[in-house]
Length: 375
Image (tube, rainbow, N blue to C red; front, side, top):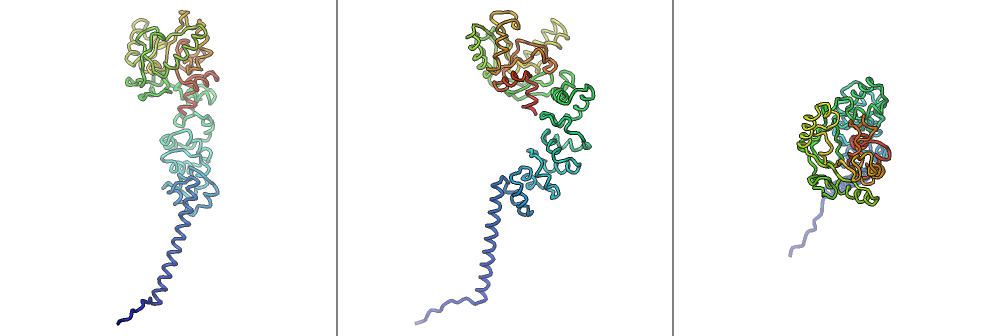
């Protein structure tokens, strides 16, 4: 009977296995430390890519001292990262631009301060900043860009308008944003997509395809004509206002609502044949430039007076229309801003929040739009 032989490893093999075990232990420990560092950085808001690059560049302590910083995150994600610009990255306000770090590097090279770079980035799109960098350094950016709604791309126009008019910076920025440095109807912004906050004036044109997405027919209870159409959201608000004013023994009626591009064109041609070109230029919006095409504007009349501006209903509207989301679109003292003469009957639905702000600050939709919507 054969006896079993015990298998015994040679000492040299055992030593090798010990070494391998030690190496694996070290690698596992390093992996644990690495993953723990990645997790720590990600908890601060850094992406996995940025966290990995932070560790590889031995910048963990620097980043932990700074804390959460979106510009730093973008820098460590970018192939344009420059070590010498690290402190600047951490002090420049983040903007979601495709070429953010590349453009920051170029602006630093032009000797702009960190605060000025933040200002430049804040006031323009990625394309605007890329184009702006091509010009020589501007010494006094704060002149216009301390104003929140100033636009980077309009710099030359601001300078020219300021030189021509001598107006203060805030007036210049608003005027140029409103295209008041251009002739009426010259080079307008063309709008195709429907939106509730759309701005229409002599420099912002609705295309012939533009049409409200919620057009409804206005009941004869609320309108002077059986064929008037309106945006549903505006009509619903009007009905609430109609019921409120009725409680005060007053009455309002919609005399005009939605008009299509083609209908506005026909209206212009009619008035042109009756009164001539000068009348149309002064008092009638060209096709595409009328708020009525939005479906959000109403010409409102009184059921007790033929002259709306002299009616009690008009006084009530002045005090209460904003509560229902309506503004007097073309006020008496704002012709230079709106581009239109005073129209006491023309009301535009903008929603209660915007209407309340405009009422409180005695401003116009143009002023609100460029300060808060199209900054």
